[in-house]
Image 1 (cartoon, rainbow, N blue to C red):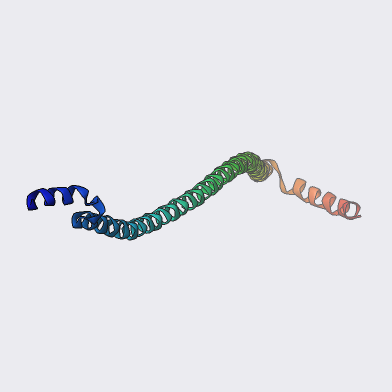
Image 2 (image 1 turned 180 degrees about the horizontal axis):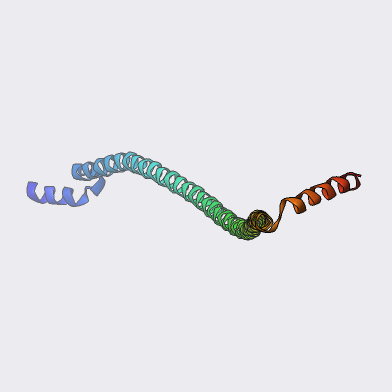
Length: 174
């Protein structure tokens, strides 16, 4: 009987009266309590990591926008500098062309001036040469006349010529 009674009591005994059941319930409660705490810690850590990642993404987007603004600014400055360089080159070319033309005009004027000076010197040299030739011709003529007069003139004729020259002198001085 005792075995039959034990079997009957065991069958009649409810599952919640068994100690294994309560160990199972305690284990489930323990797991649920610690799981909830662990779940909260994991979700907080994940939320914190998510916020950090979002902050980094926002920072990266902000930095990217700043970099794009800087790039656009530098490209604008580069275009402006290139345009300014083109304007400077154009002005320099125009100035060089103007200076070249001015130098050509100045050179032509200088050449004409030197040509005029050379022509003046040549004319002056010709005049000087003509004066020297005339003076030399006068000297030669005087020498020839003196020689002729000395050869053909007699003392009587020379006295008469001197007297005539003296008489004409007052007329020529007036």
